[in-house]
Length: 395
Image 1 (spheres, rainbow, N blue to C red):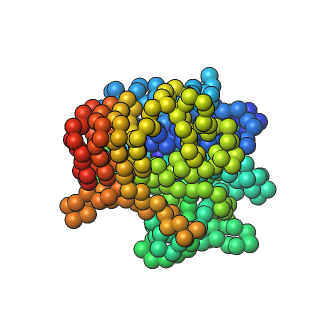
Image 2 (cartoon, rainbow, N blue to C red; image 1 turned 90 degrees about the horizontal axis):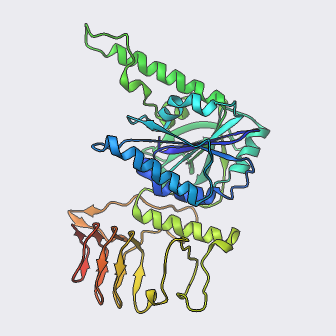
Image 3 (tube, rainbow, N blue to C red; image 1 turned 90 degrees about the vertical axis):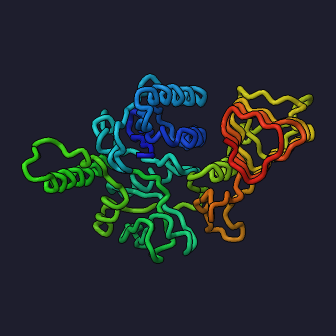
């Protein structure tokens, strides 16, 4: 499903985190933000994900341990936390229907659904206020984009007075609206009924497509795949069931390594405004801190770590080392700073068979020697380099 949901009730917040096999790092970013969303109810976690092809038996326990570790570090775990496994891809809405009993257990008033591949300041309190003022099955968080980039997102046509969604198109071929879907939702329990209708329709269509003579009494395996945007939002738009809450806060998709760096910068800027105590500060005998920097409590940064070494626009994997006088640098793909409605473009690694300039990525336990240049390159894990590299994937 690639998202997460949290139910709001007098008993607290219920959280469904899904897509961990693909978005574990983004999930961590969300929860770092989530610890000060302004909703006072307690949290319980229902984590959901699916196995990666070829590693079905071993992948899920490792993901569960990783997720549990992240929650423990962020002090967000609770005894009610559980892991729910998707054995097949269920689409952006199929996971909600598949785990409907777990989501609705305890009778929540409503539940949030947050895609794990977005970063945001998550204005959940404002969404909850809007929902309680005017309850409807579906409340979407929306923001604005420029005309060109709006074609890369779900586009929303709203009634400006009531904020009802009159028309919804997922990634249109021509301009529809500059209001786009943020992938952050607040659903009432009634929202699961249209998902049930889609499931039943998929089941009927699948049985009609079976070859003559085959048994059609069982469930068609593809019936559980539900596309929330196309199967539900587009179908129900204009029927008084879907509304949009607009935000002007930070928001970006996390579809690539470069966008993850940009998202981290947005969060660090947000910390400067809301939680400056989370940012690292210069201390006597420690490394020199410039700008907004977050250092994990378990990280060890020696005073000599920055002596004559330059690391820019780079993701450095766990256990990697960079020698003195080395320069490790990438090329950022940030939005146009002169366009307030611009967003990150989805990057492609190659063009005409050549590696495009992008951020540099060092896998885990990579060793960069002293006095070398690593520029716009991807270094796979456990590599020990002996010279400079530019615009290469180092296997």
